Length: 182
Image (cartoon, rainbow, N blue to C red):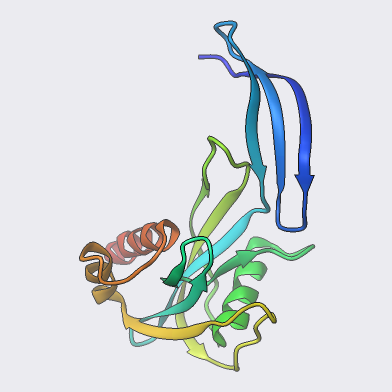
């Protein structure tokens, strides 16, 4: 297999949220695609956060794209100059008010959708979390913190008893595999 070659590239728009780029690509077999669209987004971090009594710290919020309320793990973009670990600890603190004396454990780094997006997500596990402050939300955020027993969360996913997104489901199963090995 060989990589595609970019023969032309132009931005259709650029915003603080993300950019849309239109590329012309030449495939190894000689075919040319004149309008291959790539969404450029910042990399994200997210974390499965567990309290000392094995409660999973989740955030519920309205997601306009999905037109519903979703139960998710804390997540967000890193700020300028932050490490991944600093970014996720800040996001957890801001969204939930929780923190931990433990260091976050990296569960994995993945492309979000490499067919049409250029960004990655790093998923962490944070244990022994406790509430240390009130939420510090952006003016566009309305987030309700929910605690659910870690072992029961898998049943909620499998039985489709909650609305969540793929990142939360995959992070849960990665964390479960790591914790089952301990």
